[in-house]
Length: 75
Image 1 (tube, rainbow, N blue to C red):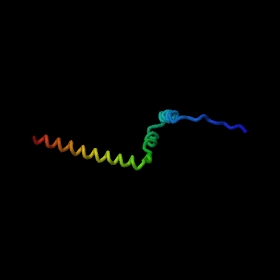
Image 2 (image 1 turned 120 degrees about the vertical axis):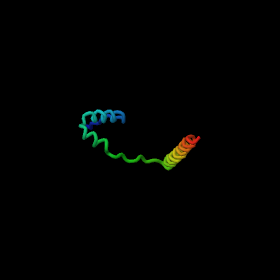
Image 3 (image 1 turned 90 degrees about the vertical axis):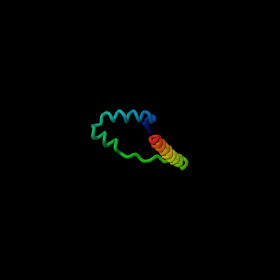
Image 4 (image 1 turned 180 degrees about the vertical axis):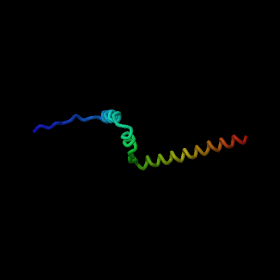
């Protein structure tokens, strides 16, 4: 029994093939392809907690910057 085995391809090779295929799509096909939703990546609880901490930090720093800007306008 003869089996044809295809050599394993790397992700980089698959990405290069996808980029070449995109060049041949018509504009409406490209828009349809690009508008497909991508599912969320599964993250650990620690990663989710770190992202929420980062969001809270950004909000606090943004509030501090806005307060400083407004307070300097009155001076």
